[in-house]
Amino acid sequence: MALNLVRNSRVFFTTNVDTYGVVQTSGFTAANTQELQVLDGFTFTQATNQDTITVSEAGSAPIRGQRSFNTSLAPVDFSMSTYIRPANAGTSITAEEAVLWNALLGVNAISTANTLTIAASGVTAAYAFAAGVGTVTLTGTFTTTSLAIGDAVIISGLSHATDASILNSAGVIKTLTGSSITIELTNPKAAGAAITAITAAGPVKLYKSAWAPVATTYSYVSSAGSNFNQLQKFGMIFIVDSVTYVVDNCALNQAVIDFGLDGIATVAWSGMGTALSDKSATIGLAAALNTLTATGGGAQYTARNLTAPFITNKLSTVSLSLVNAIGSAAAGTAYAIALTGGSITINNNIAYITPANLGVVNVPFTYYTATRAITGTMSAYMKTGTGVQSTGQLLADMLAAASSSTEPMATLSIAIGGASNATKVVIDMPSAVFSIPTIDVQAVVSTTINFTAEGSTPSATANGNTFALDKNNDIAIRYFSA
Image (tube, rainbow, N blue to C red; front, side):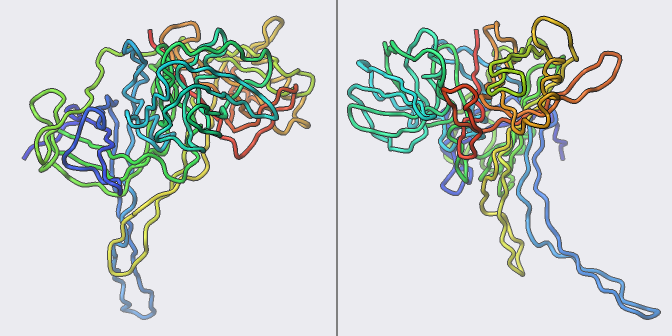
């Protein structure tokens, strides 16, 4: 009998599942299975729900017993934390946790099948904005197999002197022919100079996954393709010493990005599944590097990247500016915030469904997403005085408009690792509603700013932007690496 030590644990994410999300015992490849480097403290467990029956009767010798019945299994809960580690692969920016971002915010796997080169060359592009809608129209000779009107895609391959990041982003296909494709951008450019002189020197690609390496300098993931009642099917494999535990039919529920001042940039992930099982007899690690043993022979997986850089939170910067005026503070007013801490939470609010039949132990069989809630906090010292607008001025402006501004809208960009550094992760929230900062009176007075990222309809008219429940441009994340 041997003890299982957590230090010998290995964790794998796999899309090698059947139509019900059950992890297969053969067919593992580098394309469908990724090893994850996780921190100490990862968990996976499945609880049992019980119904206990008791009686209560009078008399000097009453019956005092009870009977308990196992009625159902709760969904499997699993959690783990990973460092944020963008890696430069030469032609693209990669990350181990890319598969987790993709599962959190999309339905399609990161795969060659969902990477569509619509034209190798000869593409022209035009941008237009009207009535809150920004579109990119591509003209050329296209391969449109596997594309349909209404598909959520990410554009890659367009070049522009200043607005390439707006063009190479998420959108929805509105028109589709062999010579023209119109894509409505999720987060278009509404105001300022028009986007002209767009070029496409090389291949133009459309990605149907949530994560996409849209340029050689950065990869991109956003909430644009997450308006579905079920997200990407995947499974988790936890190998603890020589024991292999498998979680089937998984869904990623939540990610918490922590940018504590003295730490390394980290994401805490949590999710659920329908079943937990011991598959030690059919799935395990072979002696050969990058090989999972399985029924039918060995199989490959994508190995851990041991050389990817870490990101220190202490270099992080914040850009916060008003989208619409609040009181006497005009639209476009920017505030300088030097972080002392904070976090962002992305929550899918997933709920699993379990039958309630008598005489059997019921098991969860499916799930649905609910509200996509993106919330966060930023902590900073209270700074007042003349010069650059800071936390003290933000508090003053918010207090002055407290009785009239019901939905104060700001654009918020957090550069984890520093905006000027080559290796960083930039989190953009174009329309966040924020509350009046709270004050913490200590030796150095500090403040906490709470915010919620929401969808919005942009406007070219000053103060014309509006929050919109049906929009999914809440958040976009870009990974950069030197």
